Length: 310
Image (cartoon, rainbow, N blue to C red; front, top):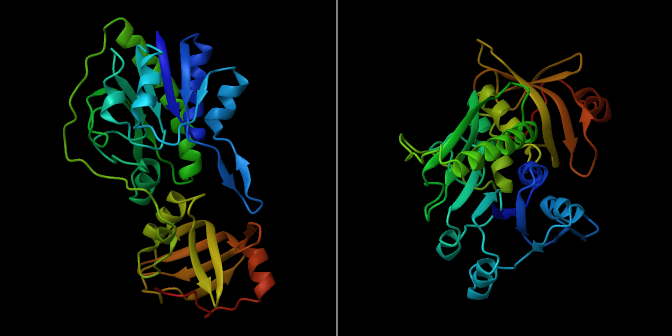
């Protein structure tokens, strides 16, 4: 089976690795262009490209994928199927129509829930206890294609977007191989999506601003859901503070939102709209991650001080 693989970030590496290790004929890997990263503005290769280079695969990094020339170049490779895993751009109709077996997408949610660019993050932000992987045949809609296979994954309280992404990337690789096997022996039948859809739009930096008037559990889910990017943040005076790790505590008495209610042991207890958020780990702007204890010692925090409320 001749396969063209579209993918860019770390999440897409295990699926490509699984294809290579299974001996599949990956005739080309399409990834987004290298980007400047970090304070030194060094040119950085996408993780999928790095892996593809290590395996000697043919790599294509187009600045755009809608040109006739690009579509023609893919057509000349005569793919049986195109596999898309977190590529980062919408695949145009001309490419969707190329392979006889269609374009297969590995999507990190149980469709039709959380269609869109950031399903892992939004599933945590919304307090879901389970999520999963869906393989589907792509159409021109936003993750609206017929489903092939699904596999459910538990979201644990200590999961964040990074740890959950790692788990789902491995699940996705396994499910992709089962999907390709089913397509080869004609044992899988596409099934239309049913039920009420929900959406997972791209995250923006401002999505990380903590609203202390929200319940503690919602702030806790936000902190987990947007780690490591864009990160949940607030201010102490004029200093921006990213909260890395916390826990939500039920509290019958209504605390004052954003106020430091108590400092005890290695925790900072902050009032919210309902309950207490215990802050365990932070990252002040321009500094390394540190424990709440180290943060307190460096600033001589006292009970009654307040983080900025929105």
